[in-house]
Picture (tube, rainbow, N blue to C red):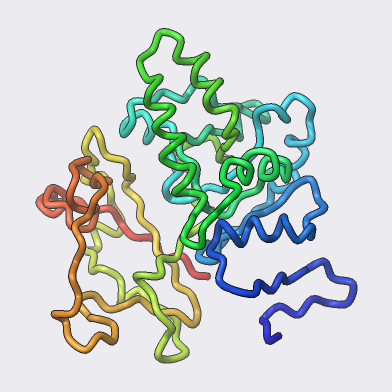
Length: 310
C-alpha cells in the first residue's frame, strides 16, 4: 500500500488500512476494534488540524492526569485554538454560563484547566477508557456520515443550558460536566497573552497550490496599516462570541481559494450560497456569518488577521 508514513525500524506507528470509507467517527471506532491501542492515553487527531506552536507541556498534562484525584473528572484535554482563547469570558457573553468557579488552577495560578461547554472534535488528548466506556458506548452503531462533535457537542451544550440560572447551578454543572470531562489547557493564565496552539484549516477555503509557493499574505483580505497594528476600535457586541484576533495559516502546498471564484465549476450560476443557519459570532443575530455581518461592516475597526507560517 502506498503511504506517506514510513516508520523507522522498531517504530511504533501502525497504519490501519480500512476496507472502505468509514468517516471520522467510525474510523476512530475501528482503531479501537482492531485492538491496536494498548496505551492508557490516546491522541485523537483531526486531518485538518495543524499544530502551529510547540507543545512543551504535554508531560505536565500527563503527569496531572496520572494523579488519583483527577481521574474522576479530567478525561479529555484540548489544546488552545482561536475558538477557546479567553474562553471563560466568551462563554459568559454568548451563553450566559459562568464557568469561572470550575477552572482548575495549577502552578500557583500560572496555568489552568478550563471546562468546555461544547464537545469539540478537534485534536485532543484523552484517556483510552473515556472512549471505550463512554464515547463509543453511547453510539455503538455509528454511520459513515457521523462526526463525534455533531453527536456530542450540542447535546452537552443543551444539557448545560437547561440548568442555567438554577439555585443549585454549581452542583448541577459539576454533575453534568463530569461525564464529559472535557477541558482546554492553558500554560498562560493571562487571557490577554494566550495564543492558539491548534489551527483548523478549512477545506472550503484552500486548495492544492497551482505552484510551489505557499499561500501569501497578499491573498488575505486587505487591511489598512491601522487595522494591522491597532485593534482598540474593534468592539464586539455584548453577545458576541468572537475576539479581536483572527488567524489564517500559510501552508506549503496549499493556497487560498480566490474569493468570488467558482473553483472549477462550469459557471458561477451553478453555485448556490446556502443561508447561514447559526448565529453570527459578532452581533449574535441569526442568518449571516461573521464575514458578512452588516454590523461589523459599518464599524471602523476590524479584527486584524495573524498569519501563521506552518
